[in-house]
Amino acid sequence: MEISIHACNDRIKQNHKKKSLSKNIFLEDFSTNLTRLKASL
Image (cartoon, rainbow, N blue to C red; front, top):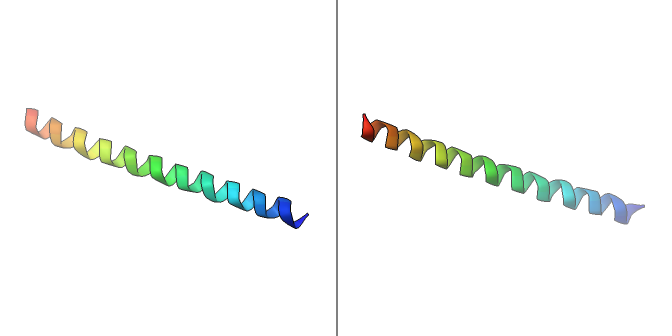
């Protein structure tokens, strides 16, 4: 029982890391696109 709980917690942590990582990548892309837009104006 305890082992499965630990496995679930590990999965949740991994998913959270993936989500936060993709969010950071999205924000970086957004800021670079914004600077490109400003440069083209």
